[in-house]
Length: 275
Ligand code: DGL
Image 1: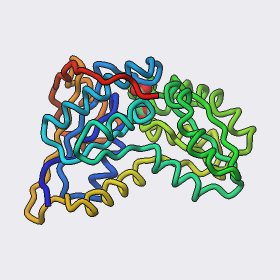
Image 2 (image 1 turned 45 degrees about the vertical axis):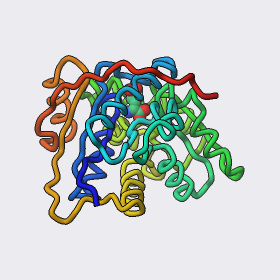
Image 3 (image 1 turned 180 degrees about the horizontal axis):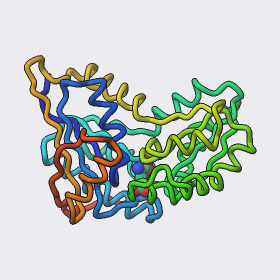
Image 4 (image 1 turned 90 degrees about the horizontal axis):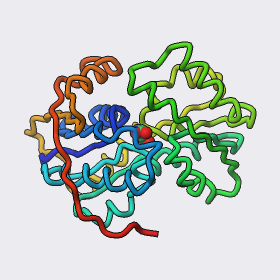
């Protein structure tokens, strides 16, 4: 048993979709969330920079005493998952594997689309993982402006729909029956994405499946919070305005996030990038 919080992070508000799923599945668990708003967005940045920023955030969470790390960001997972698993003693859960698993068990026609940031799609991580199953055909598309929209709190404007039409047209024409939302910001745009793709295309996001991975890890390592635990939910941001992060969270998720405090991540010494 362990009453320490689960540490969850993303570049911004996207990981809150994962934090919400974790809290729904594990209501007795405390959560410490960091949005790395000082360095958001991660998607267009060089992978080496994302790796550094993300490890700095994870170091901060570990210093704050979390019992588990959840990388609730596809771009960061693509940049440094293996580094993270080597660097920390606490278990590390990420979002790409759960999304891949769900997509494979969802598709009927074996044609799967994946959308994500430039960093995630450029890394080829989804294409590689799904490509292991040679019965699948994978179509990948970067959607750089989607994160911009979400971070601006804009999820349903005509502009969002027009941009979604443009990004998703190749996937519609490819006849995919399953579309992986390979960025934790995208569930906030699910209305527009689903409208454009049509009702016959299943949308897969990693939040609920990732929460199941968190559950599994906590049980198998005997890390569940004790029966008398009083869970806390603490939200931190690295940028210069806690209020901006809080009002965006309210706009996107209602009153679930009650307060945000600022935190600074420290510069760290990094081992050389892995091949
Ligand atoms: N939410 C993040 C992801 O899943 C990254 C968004 C960004 O900062 O570009 O990839």
